[in-house]
Image (cartoon, rainbow, N blue to C red; front, side):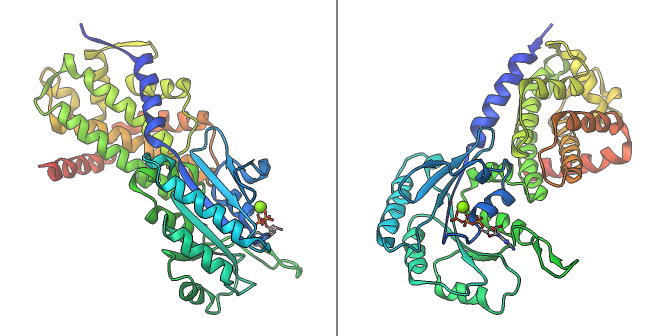
Length: 381
Ligand SMILES: Nc1nc2c(ncn2[C@@H]2O[C@H](COP(=O)(O)OP(=O)(O)OP(=O)(O)O)[C@@H](O)[C@H]2O)c(=O)[nH]1
Ligand SMILES: [Mg+2]
């Protein structure tokens, strides 16, 4: 009887998911005090900027990164210094050298050029820097500490014509002296969405994982993981697979769970993923055999039991994979919404997922995903 080593499959899935995710590389430039460090901490997981100034890259640029967060930030300053031309030269060299690297992973994928709204100025130094950077990478204008536009955004567009977009942000709540008067943070999700629009396709997952302001961004990337796994599963079952051989679907689904976990930015330890897999397969043992696991998976399909004895068709494989992926995404969205974007602990994710898998035999819930899977298949034809 065919069997599968789950421990090995989980390890492989995690390694591949992390490798495929890569890292998003961001350059942040702007005058001192404009709010760069605050912005970094408000947009990304990990309180990066608070961990210090990072490792010096050049006289004016520090590289900030943290294990487990798929992100590297070049935090630059010195725009106001008398030796600005030197700063400009250093930054241009940096992005140019990076842009010539053969591997996309080594490029700097986007620059955020920060301007203070209160200052209402775009200086020649900023214009020059924008022009230079834009030759090598997409640049976004970021208006910080926003509270009253008064035409400044349009002015920035006019004075920095090379930028792909200009986004107004308030990274932290603004507290006024008058008691009870404050303005909440704003624009951070716009900044992430605008960034997602300009970074390369292969970097979208890392951006979704690293940022904490948009659960929707994570969800969207996770749907792409599911769609791709469903397609792979359908291809594997293009010729219907006898149940005893349906184990070949399991590594596809484990990879999908790992892929969804990483685009949500979860700490994907082997223990965590193994628990998820045990929830799905209904066994905590390290080896599973074909018939048992398929019997367990088929409970995700209404009436699945009745087709037992036949074979797994492409439609069934797609449905199984899609349903499972969507249940996991729904669990993560629920948990992340509760933590307001902060990384939840994996116990909470496990609990939510287990609960939803248990109730997933509800027909109306599954009908939704069956039609989704059907559409997916239709599109493939
Ligand atoms: N009200 C308000 N204050 C902000 C905002 N963003 C940053 N600040 C404040 O502005 C000050 C400077 O912010 P930083 O993030 O340290 O500025 P920076 O650009 O990193 O400065 P350097 O590291 O010196 O280049 C801090 O007191 C922040 O709290 C914002 O959106 N609204
Ligand atoms: Mg700073």
